[in-house]
Every structure is written in structure tokens, then in C-alpha cells.
Length: 492
Ligand SMILES: Cc1ncc(COP(=O)(O)O)c(C=O)c1O
Image (cartoon, rainbow, N blue to C red; front, top):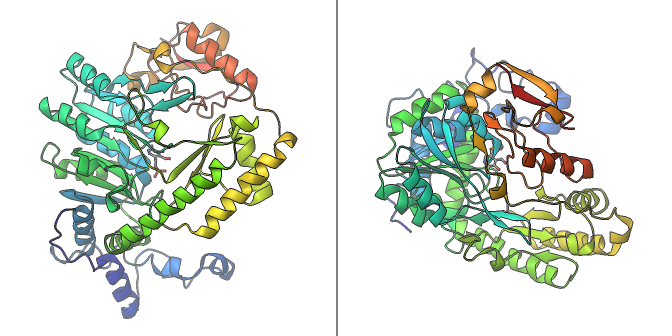
């Protein structure tokens, strides 16, 4: 842990909000509800007045004070210090937007960027928006578990050698399964070639605050990371943080790129929650996350008593697999109980009052955080025990044939931006082979884009997608026609 120079016991945005509330000024500036006075009481009954009271200082006090007294700037400096970054920037537009701005900060129209194919859709949209030429790097693939792992160091080294003009590498780590890339080794490879490493760390905002969690992007030496403060942390939804390290990316450029897409009216409540969570983590992160780690061990021990369910653990780590994993992501394979992930999750929600965080065809993921307790873990385990007992009443799992993503090597024939914004038409899927896609098609499972705008649609991809959709075990939510009867292709 680095030595702290700033007074981490303060939370300047919370203080500014408290001060604003105390002053009770007559305000003639948005928000129009005037600190909640105009809000319908039925809304207050559910949301409470405090939500609206917090929407008070977007103009009056947070960022219009003299430099040095700006609450937002100080809160960001405190966050940067807390996570081992040189700079931090808060965003209120979710990591979906931060990922795009981060990409725009390192690559522009026509630039090449080495990108992890097992990515969130915001990365694809960032590629389209920026006019980036993606150099895809496939995930590691565990064929038995039908599970993608982050790309390995050797594969990234080869891509960097093959693409000397690429601006750098963009990876997702941790993934939604909690699996992590070897960021320290990959950062070294990038920096040896003076390239940048950008990490979509949406699932890793908590990592800097406990030594037994995987190493976070900043500690591993990445240049830029984006975290979602609310996924694994205590932020409000949409609270996201850019973290910047080293001097390969100019913070002023990042700020400009963030402004290009961001809102001019950021929610002070979202900023305040990030600020308060940072203070809480600096002061008590070790204790609170230590407790969460103990709960994870309890959950795993409980699951070990259910032979029909298999919980992923250190088996996720090793050569050809992941470099590390976050034990707070409790990944449970339900296929041994003969049920599918979505049916198990639906049953748990409806019959056991348990909402899990993610689902694939054979797994559910229960995400523990610093806010969980013995009680919530008991509820999870009780729900899973009941699920096992009720399994014969659930639909039988439908097997899905998932090829190794490497077998579906995409042929990129146009910039994704040109294909996305150019002329396009819907054609029957039977006529789509050989055409250039004008849309993204991401089948779930495995949640890895099979087709990205600008790629030639191969027979192999089409067969795999249509066979998957026919089983009803595969969904394609982002396709213009999720039934895949028709596909959106580029036309001249
Ligand atoms: C890996 C990854 N990156 C980025 C995002 C976008 O985050 P947000 O929901 O904060 O916009 C998500 C959302 O789930 C994600 O899983």
C-alpha cells in the first residue's frame, strides 16, 4: 500500500452537499423541482426527499469554486491516491460511456487497437464511434467448462509484435466471472513497446482495497482503467471512475474525450456516493472486504456439500486459463443438476427470493460484496439447496454446442464505423453468407460477439448461430432481428 499524502478522512462532495443544504438558498437554477419541493408526494413516499435534496449543487458549489477549493477536483484526487492512480475522473454516465471515452483518449479514426474479443458492447460501440480498426484477440477457451478466459500474455505479445502500429491493448479484467488477465505482465509488454494498456475494470472497483483480491489495474501498471463504482462497490448506479497512471496518456486529453460524450449536468448524488465510498474503503475496506472474503469461503463450503452444483475456484487459474480470479464472484455450474442457468436463476428469483447476478447456459453467478452478511449467504445457500431438491420440476437443460471462438476467426473487411453508418439492408439469413455485417451479433451464451459490423459473415458463424437460436438456449439480444431469420448487412 502506497503512503497517503492527502487527508483521506474527508469527503469533500458530501461536505459541499451538507453545506448547501444548511444554506437553504432560494435557487433559480435547475433542477426545476427545487430540492424536492415540487415533487409529487407519491414519488417522495418511495424515493424519499433526500434523493432530490442531493440534486442541488450541480452548479452552485461543486465545481465553480476557486481552483484548489473545488470539491469535485479534491474528491477525484483523493480517489486517485486511494487506488494508486496519478489522476482520477468521476463520470455519471456509467462505464458504458467511460469505456468509449477511454478508447477515444488512446485511438482515433483509422488507428489500430488490439482489443479483447470477449468484451462488453460498449467497447464495440467505442470502436464504431472512434472509427478504430480493431485487431481482435480471442479469449482463452476452456472447452470442457465452455468458459472464456481473458487472453494470455503470449497471445498479446504476438499481437503486439504483429501490429507495431497499434496504439495499445484494451482488455476486460476482471470478467463478469471474476477471472483476471495477467495485467502486470501485459503492461510490461505494452510499455516495452511504448504502447498503452487500457483496462475495462468495470467489475473491479473494490480490488485496490484488499490485498487478498486480485491486483487492480493501477497497481499492475496499466495506463488507464475504467471502474463502475456501483457494481462491486458502494456507488450509485452510473457512477464510474477513470483512473490514469504514468504519462503515456495526457489527463487533459482524457478529460476532453470524456467531455465529448459526457453530460454537462452530472448528478451530485452520484459523485457524492463515489466520494463517500472511497473514504469508507480507505478507512474500513480491509475489514469489510475481509468479511466479504470470509463469506465467500462460507458460501463455497456450503456449495461443496451440494454435489449437483460445482463452484468455480482456483481451478479457473493456470496455464491457458486465467491469471487470477476474484473469489467474491461465486460462479456456480448448475449443469450437474440437469438444469440450465436461466431456468435456475428464474426459479431462484420466483421461488426462493434470491436474485443472482449473471447467468449463462450452465452457470449462475452470485456476486458477493462488502455489504453482504451471514444472513444473505444463508439465503443464497438455502435457495440453492431448495433448487437442487426441486430440480426434477424444472425444464431439463438444453445442451448448447459452443465452438472455440478461435475457430470463428473473423474476417474484417471494412472499418466497423463504415459498416455501421453506411447503407444497409435486412436480408434473409440464408442469403447472408459472404455479406458484410452492418450489426453486432452477440450470442448468449457465451456473451462474446460472434459478428461485428464490417466483418464478412461466414457459413461457420451462421450455422453456429442459427443452430443455437433453434435450441432456444441461445439468445441474441443485440441483433436487429433476434430470431436471426434476417440479418443486417452492408449494401453498396
Ligand atoms: C465488462 C463491462 N464493461 C463495461 C460495462 C458497462 O458498465 P455500466 O453498466 O456501468 O455502464 C459492463 C456492464 O455490465 C461490463 O460488464
